[in-house]
Image (cartoon, rainbow over all chains, first blue to last red; front, side, top):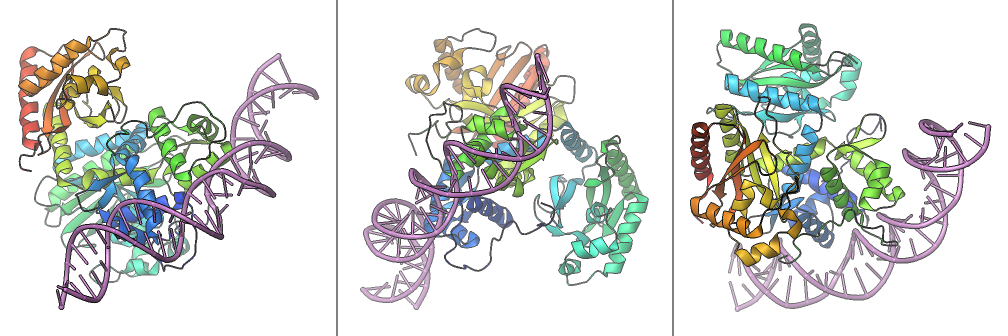
Length: 264
Length: 264
DNA sequence: ACATCATGTCTGAAATACCGGACAAACTAA
DNA sequence: TTAGTTTGTCCGGTATTTCAGACATGATGT
């Protein structure tokens, strides 16, 4: 429980013959593979992606199709997530009042500002967007919900690891994650300093980090035990003028504070 | 494929002795049972709900917990849907551009009018809310996403079965579904007439039907093959003045038309 | 035309995942 | 206290499911 942080699903890997596996595990690998792929996949390819025999994969896929957990897309044998998944996911995000309040705030902020707003968190040792409201304008630069991104690439990441000291951070974050998509490398020491600063000032900003066009600002949502599980975050065009940025940052911090739980 | 419409999951039923079942099927039953129950459940109770042995249930639940498809809630052994479900569901609802446009419209309509807006569809022979934006006011009367409701109770239902003739309707809708929560019974003939009228006028309205406080209006979203898979729907306080209702109905119909696909 | 490759379905056989039942521990009630 | 219930874990046997491979069919490419 407390050790195996990141190898529940050995999706790709080599087809290391004669390993019989449970149907349940196949299902889990299959769904995780679909999530990573982010587009409908043919059954044959799915079999390769999860390293399962074709016949097995067909049977599993057919079961999941019948349950509407998967759905046929197009007419050429592609499958993707189905309606039931949507209902399950919705049930998850609305069963607790706190999460509901967070989503309402997301809606309100998007409506008031017209900017892209995100709710972010960790998944294993990566950063993920948990939900977002895209700006209606031509700037559609936000990353997709559920896609895993290295922590050092993001403003929210700097807040979400705020409870760790330097040694823990070194252990937690894979060495390769300091390398940005454009090839630049973030010096770990600099990153640690960023984390420290983010903790001290209660917010974090990055500009032109993961891509050249965005200015990100993040503020923490505390969970009532002092920890930061979630952050609220604006993704702005990088040429947003400073007065507006400051105004948005104030709003962001205020709303995130409002969503934080104080008592135990 | 074309016959077995509505018995994929035999959840409750009697514990009819030595029936061995696949893990996958157990998983499906389990998730469906959680969805119906709409609240965290203890493992022991889950076992009863899906008619599985306790030992099996524990094993399955533990697998799903590890995959984050389920999540522990509280500290007394309750489980409910987990984060992975949210990500899967999000991937489902955003993978196709049409659905994305629908959700954006939902957002816009909610923001513009301040009323409760829903996206509805069928699931088997029941009506379900697929997504909604709740009105911020004190009127919080919308039903939960994913809860199955008899078709005759709803305005949207009258549109969603518009392609069926009377004989098909009689076969499709369970006799008990004509009985309203307060005990009143809708005469089937009257319902058939409603369906016909809804088809003719291109929208449907109900007042004080499923409950005494709401006025519902629904408009169809056509899928490009002439069928109606989805409806857009306002849920209003029943005392909403008529001029405002008419104005909202116009907006609803216009937006639904805008979302309908015309070509093949 | 031929060759090559992918799809979807079946089958037999063997490995194993599920089941029933037992057990200790924790909790409740009287 | 005792008696009754529930929880979480473990174990051995066997009914079942996964697996490998074959097959017909339909694409695709040269």
